[in-house]
Image (cartoon, rainbow, N blue to C red):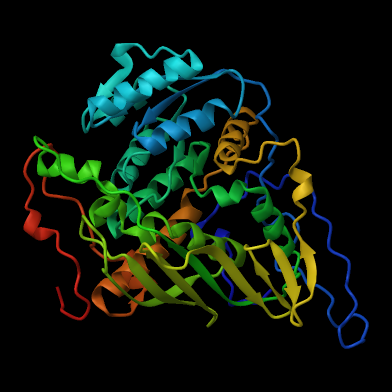
Length: 451
């Protein structure tokens, strides 16, 4: 393993306390394409036991009764609540909170109708401080699914109170949030808390099996890659009568940079994270560009193209777009010295294009294969088995890469890791209250303008 590659434990002090779920056998040596026996022998990128593989049973094993709270009762919070309830027996939801009362009542009604869970009104919290009340209500664990801007502070408070966290991605939108998350993650490890993030590919069976094969050396040393999230435009909310500036922005949060981080952070972080996860490489620089072509609301771009450079000189190209009528592609490609891996068909090919391994979909028959549910299975199992895991640091690395790419595209300047992690960048508004905002502040960036 090259000494230019920085392990996650070295770079972010990632806890290996969770261990590895079972020993991984080394792959057999395939015959060399040039006929010389052993020339193409696979050398593992990491030794057995140096990387984490989650156990993925259909449900977490029975154990301690657990009570969860949900912070953020919109679509993602409601979906995560259902994923959680489908992940194990002996669990329930006892408190919910959101800025808006209609969101709280919506989740309350769904839980009652579909799961016969009645949340008492005294445990239904509304307002910007609802997160504190949910966490202080006596829950063991909390699902944090608010708009991304709020997640660092909500995570920090939950860790302070000793509550296990499911932290939806992205987990920050700026440098200040990144540092908050990193500090809270270290405290979570010290308190033996379990923190799972919403990077569900880490719990998706074909990705996990592909990761194992790459670590076993089937593509050799990683030399580059391409990651994509190109799709049609996401949803937006037109302003309704009676909504203040703040209310409109929060209800339309996916289109405002201070709330979502822009789609390179909010959505494309998944693909960026796959390369960071598989390679373990430390990012050092991003050079990107982007623009706004057809977005309807907000202050964001609708396309980005970013070149990421890593500590060992390897480059990875990142591309994301949310524009109707264009070709779509959501995938990752990783090139190695002996071959390549592609998530399009979850196959590994040698340098001549021959498939040397491919994920067998038949192994999924009769099993729980929803990664959104399996991440909750792993979360609950980690708590019940007392095998703490804190994914927040790894996710923060990928998240900061996305922020670095965004800022490079916004400014037209290359951005380094040191510049971004030490930056004073803080996207928080002057006041967090439902009321008027200085909307002139929220303009679409113009690269090269210095603004």
